[in-house]
Length: 355
Image (cartoon, rainbow, N blue to C red; front, side, top):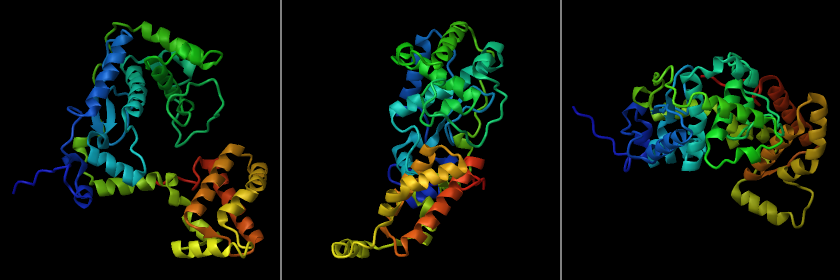
């Protein structure tokens, strides 16, 4: 029996989640992604370079190590998939032309490095370091460092020598980036100037490796969207608002909408009961300084953590229903444990789930 054609414009979410990714009727051609790829090639041509990395739909943004083809997330190929990605993961990475072009330029840097074997050149390694350095699960960055360019969010150039190069390449490739002026006085300017000279040396030169394997290609993925998102959620759980819910529920009391409005009304007469958000914000400086002294972690990391916890407590309509001193002690222990996990592993939970 011939399977029913998949109509992404009218399919229900339930049916969509039950669909295998490889069966999705999508492609780069004929979509806004095709225009983005054409723009990437035009920017490369404008620099006098002759190599166009091939682009294909994959499970995520990637340029596989040693390969020269760029993988673009499959969900960007259709509005229904973008909406689903956004609903399941809070955002669709690369959505919109500006963000997509930033990521394409980044991945193009990897492709050029592999195509011309740039990362093995002695001059490259003197500037960026050893490409053979192991990639960690996470990285520690210095937000005010002027030794690195700032292209993608998260100070990604500080992750690894390869990422330092490709982020620098992306800044150099971006039209009208005015990098000479923007990075004047920065050590990162020397890196951009090096990339400028390096790219000039390969103008009109054919790549050593013009084509590569398309790993994790969309059409080869047999996993259903439902399983794909369950796996992806586990992998990125720390980024979701409900990450703190269980522990916060042990410290504070969450009210229903009706209870919350009644509480706000009663507060006019009884000021003794405070919200969890108020307690956290009132003592956040004391908690921050205490944890900073005992863990040695940077204050802005702890401060961001406290802000996120306070925001989540507010969203859950939480109040302090036990003695404030007890709640503060429990909160401090929780934040300290998260901070120590981050110090030793780079993740708040201590380890990142790989299941």
